Image 1 (cartoon, rainbow, N blue to C red):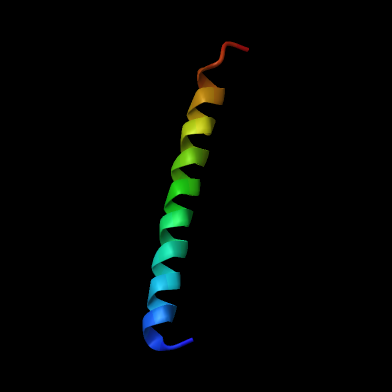
Image 2: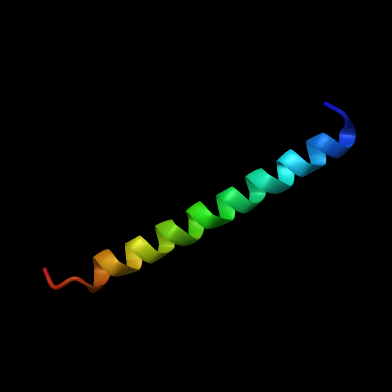
Length: 36
């Protein structure tokens, strides 16, 4: 892999991580909103 490919894969992983992080936050909020 050359430098350009490395940068692109890092960017893709960062975007995936951001998506997972926001999904986790949303599901956590939904769980806390449920009446127990």
